[in-house]
Every structure is written in C-alpha cells, then in structure tokens.
Image (cartoon, rainbow, N blue to C red; front, side, top):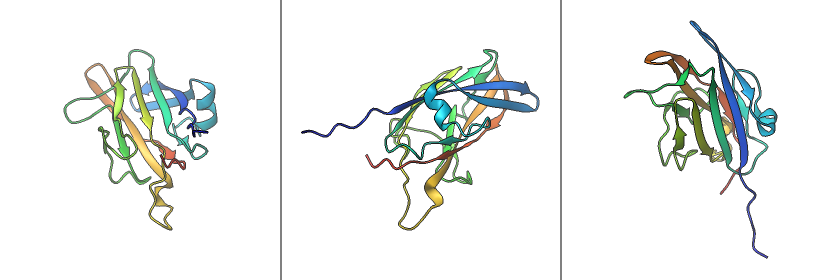
Length: 156
C-alpha cells in the first residue's frame, strides 16, 4: 500500500493593531487550528506537535493598517534562531520557506512553513525560530513585530 502524507495543517491568525504610536498588536486565532498553536497574544506559535509542513495565513485588522514593505523591507522576515540574529526577508528557497511567500498582500500574508527542526546533532538551538512583519498605515512605517515559532519534526 502506498504511503500518503497527511495534508499540511492550516493555521489562520488575525493581527489586530490596537495602537499605532507606540505600535501595539494582539494576535488572535482565526480558526480552530490557530487556537491550538497560538501560544499567546504576542504571536508566538508552537508547531512542535506537527511532523508536517504548516499552511499559514495572517490577516491584519483593522483595514487601515498594512503588512508594510518597501525597497528595503519585505512583508515577512525570518530568523533561523530565536535570537533573531540572522533575520532577513523571506525569499524562495529559504530553508523553512522553500516556496517563498506565495501571498504577500496589503492585508493578508500566506505561506507554507516547512516546520523542520534543522538541528545539528545534539543541538537544541534550532527548536525555536523567529518570524516578523513590518506594519504600516499607508505610506507610513509604524514598526516591526517579531514573535517566535517552536519548530516541529517534519523531515520531508
């Protein structure tokens, strides 16, 4: 009998902007899967229970605010390490984002997160990564948010 992999978990999260100055946001679950993985209102995610990729959608509210980007800032940033030391704009071929970001709109971001541990033997430093967004209002950049991700055990 052929082996069939389960579909990716689909997680939808709403990023609620509460204040522009200083920038304050609250992350809320947009579906049942998000309730299970959204660790707190700061946007920390726990994918450690999944052994497959995770399909992720973020929406921003209210509509006056944007996932913001310009020539030097892209809508989604990522670091392989919880420290955020190597934070960079996500691009096609990145380790956890093999397909890149396939939806990077003003109010919605969509991607498939590979969700593998990428640890060297005996290392735990890669169990947590960091992702982030630039938030704006029209042409105005308001700030950056960069929560963490607890990585799972996908080996695909």
